[in-house]
Length: 364
Image (cartoon, rainbow, N blue to C red; front, top):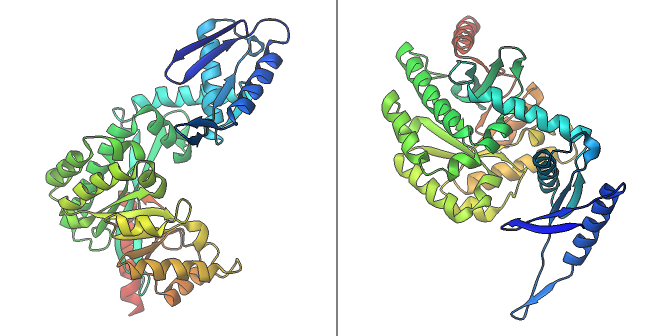
């Protein structure tokens, strides 16, 4: 390279000139990865080093140094997302993705103040008799121009940008207020247990426990009515720190759940180590009930493991009566999914509860 510099920390920059600059940069990057693959002997031990490398060139239409550096940075993070220890070249597809992310983040900044964010609620029912015992609060964004934006699109942006902290605080506060309102209305089902997701950024944030305490105090909701859901990857990102945070949350009296169990580490060790109360079986396993070979055996093993550890089990993504019947046979405690209701606005859940009550009365 014409220039090789350290930007700071573990970030380095290589500058290439000429007509074949991009090809030369990629070749150099691949050579660097090959060299780094060899172990380094440190204090009698072999240490392995990897790298994520992003390459950007003027072929993408910009010669401005800051823009080129930003493009290379975006390509580097793309390499990290794809597992690391690889080279990614900034191209048109990534450029469109970066611009979309920037637009999404910009619009998301004021979405809360403009009342564009809302909560939808999906009932959680008891498998044995189908009676609702609570609901999960799920965030939705009604963009003024784009309509409903997929959570898979905007929640990762909120997490990466840090906006998930104020948004997550609002979700918890609004969810608690809504359940308290339902309780005043005498809605025994939806006004049962409230399930709220916590992101990795929230678990790492020093104000999390205080924000949960404030939400409970302001709404008057009892702590034993709240279940906070954490993914497996969040727990294992920094297990020691997560354990401290979860124990402080438990001291408030809330319950803790592992969300999407089976898609991450699925470690018996952390199920024993962390102060958990609920295990949520991922919908991909529920979908296999009565369909995929061994589907029942997998869910049976998860349910048996959870019950042996004293955990309640919630099956996610239940869509058919066949799946529900299988869950009843397997002794699963609770379920949620489109078989019962999709996530709906609060007022629609009131109507759902009323319709369900009317159906039960007429059936009897």
